[in-house]
Length: 266
Image (tube, rainbow, N blue to C red; front, side, top):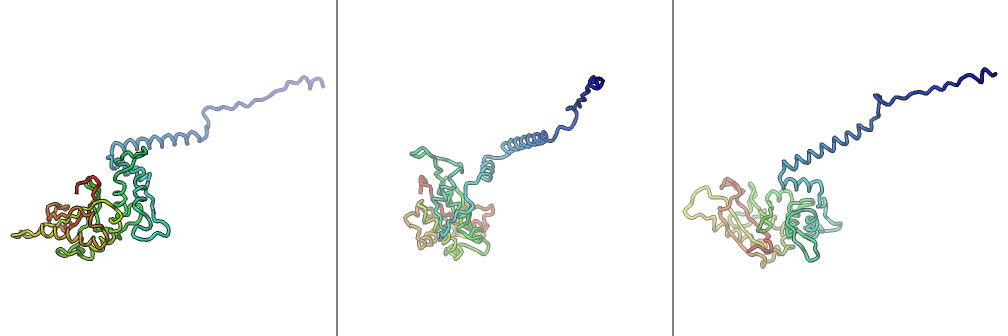
């Protein structure tokens, strides 16, 4: 028994080596996140260098839209679908950039907000358009220093005038945009343009024709309850301002309804 108690106790310790073996996959996830972040950074730097200010604004608007996809209210009726241009202007103003002016309470607002709201309602930006698909083919809208220009133009077999008389096509277009014209208080400038004549005549009729068409446009708006007092200018431009390089192009047969800025001269 004494020999058993004197036997040495041997403890074996297993040595665990930490070098050169498998480390797990956590570092791979972290490295992948780092590479992705660097790729995104270099893509951003490339985009800033390779795009214009207008393109960058478009990208920013795409990723942070400020106009609701549908602004129609439940139970609303009429041409504007239960919404008003005042609400549209507020939606467009938020985060849209552009020139801002200070107000008495220290906030800023876009002076073009209401004109942009008209453009959005006509073209259906972010919602339903006041015009159907066929009518939209006749329409071009652009914002200028003078104001918002609503351009209506001929299409093959769908002319706006027969000589100086408005066709059903033009009357239908005016009927669709009249509600939005009535809601605005801006003064209006009405202009008519024509394509060049293919044969040189002794007395070119472009001036008389476009002047007569501008007057016909005014007459067509009055039954639609557009206030005559708002019509500040009627102009016939003949063929002097073509929008198509071909002066004979039917695209040059057009009219313009301009919602003038408050500070624009009539």
